[in-house]
Length: 93
Image (cartoon, rainbow, N blue to C red; front, side):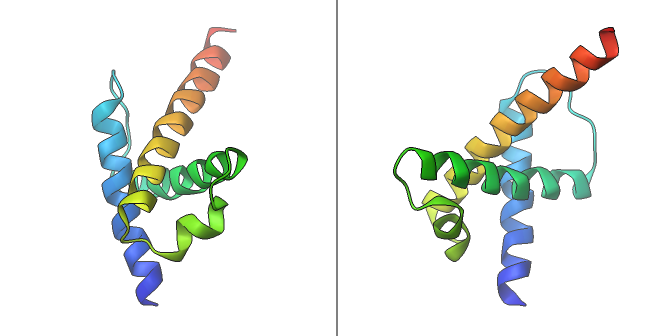
C-alpha cells in the first residue's frame, strides 16, 4: 500500500514538472497530472530498457530514487509531446 501511495506522489510531481517544462497550455487537473507521471514512468522505463537500463521493473522498484524520478519526468515529457501531436493532428482533419 505504501508503494502505491509513493508512486501516486511521485507521479504527481513528475507530471507537474513535465507540464512546467513543456511549452503551451496543458489541460487537466490533479488526476490527469498523476496519470501523466505514472504513464511517464512506464514510457521512460521502457525507453530506458531499450538503451540498456533496467527497464520498467527497475523504474518501479524504488519510487524515491532520483533515477526513477528523472525517468518518470522524461517519459512524461515524451508521452505529452506524442499525445499532443496525435490530438492536434486528429483535430485538423
